[in-house]
Image (cartoon, helix red, strand yellow):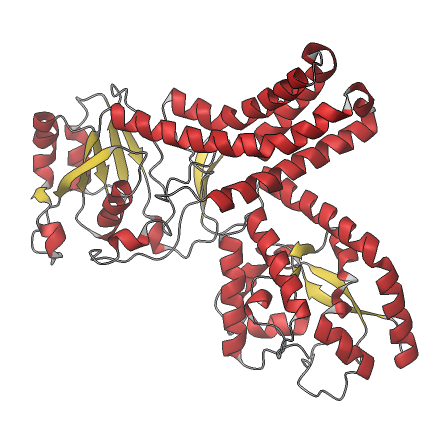
Length: 506
């Protein structure tokens, strides 16, 4: 697909790549085409088409509010901001600009998701505070800042960030409404063109009116809603754009040097339009697809891990913090379990099994031994209901998932994560990768102690390929939609599952 936009337009330009999940209800009845539920990953609200005001607000709002909140707390407690708080303000500004990324405009939602936004802010604010405490412990910076304004800052800032986010969202909507709406046409009356039209229509920040479609294929069967919007053929585009002062031209045709496409681009050369080639990505099975470049050469990621750049650092930091906070209080429990395993049956306390980790590399996963055997060969038999190999004490451990506790050590080692697809034995991986499409994609992230499949009832034995395929679907859904908020939600659901009897755990 090609995007053509006028260079001399000064109105607000906002990202058109909103996620396919947003606004489904609005167009569900009239949409004649359905494209796969996939998307190109860009940071929230990122677009080269944003004007300077929008870009500055998205990048600087949270860091500025963080520093302003600190200054306000210092002023309230009658402290000299330039004396003891300046260094803290600089460090906080730099950290918040990385941890919070850009301002999330929630552009796909008509209403502001208050609870979702607040928990997202609290989670990332907690990470920032943890980083500050770590720096303070190393540099002794905590002795230079009074405690009362510091604690007040910790409590007030999340509320200030939420309020500023809501205000900025509303302000940008007003800017778009008052800045005048732009007009657009789409060359290509096809599913991709219609999908683009519907997404433009449901984005409150774009301020774009789609006037209609142009296509040479008059014989193609089109839904009635699109027939009414066909304005002419491709030869008519240049004249129509000039006559009606069209601001944007989207070309949703295959990105190949077809004569009709070349002719269209040549006809637009005498304008000041900017031309963007945008490939049709809906034809691929996308896993965290995104645009990138290799030393200036543009590339498109079709299938990749969600933990790239700062996201990977945040994931690792959250794993270290969570596993450390969990391990400290459960060490006595693990000691009691170790004694119970040793006294209840012969054999080692821990069971070590080879499994696949990140990118399919073999790792050794620790568990409290719950069986009389320790299988780790080319053939591993899954535990079944009333399995005679499970010891009486091991049955209790497996039912409560307490046998998984040593895997927090794996998390600290870096070969596992607190949340992720559950690792399978190497023998099972080699078997299922041959019969389940996309099975190995689950290894684009580290395996987890708990996962999206497990909190949705897919624990225990997978005795059929269909059951395993269903588990893999949940694993891939987790990889596509990963966020720290999703990790937190899975952890909370895991706690609930542990205390509720699960018929699949045996």
